[in-house]
Length: 178
Image (cartoon, rainbow, N blue to C red; front, side, top):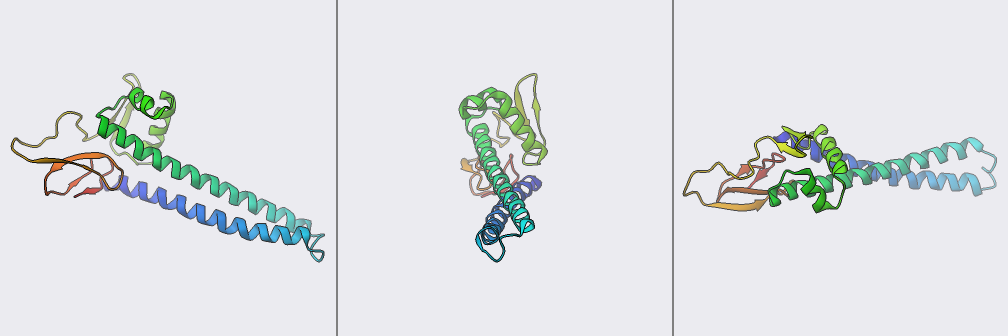
């Protein structure tokens, strides 16, 4: 279960690094490009213009990728929240709640499963549902007389039910919930 949290943190970190590098090198190569274009001493250097333009383009690409990563992590947390709070695993219910098309939700969740955000999860296309191993929709698996509390996972935002005063693993991402 920890692998899910590690994958999510690594993916988030990758997005932050790409964002930083994109802006950092983008600014540097924009300055170089403006010097090559506007300074009379460097005006004839077409190689400098081409190289700087390519590097600015790559920087913009890095920024776009980082934005998409941040959006995917945000959607993952929203999906997990919908699944845990609403107690649904229906792709149609998730789509209705998010305002997205069912195919978009299905493809997005499959990408998240492939990236190991969700372990032991699969999509049953015939039923239109996502199944996450270890998650019980109606039963909490605790004996009678155990005081339970609802708490949100600090890692993924899923609603988790646990005995009062105990630390458990989130059924969705594997993070520790105290």
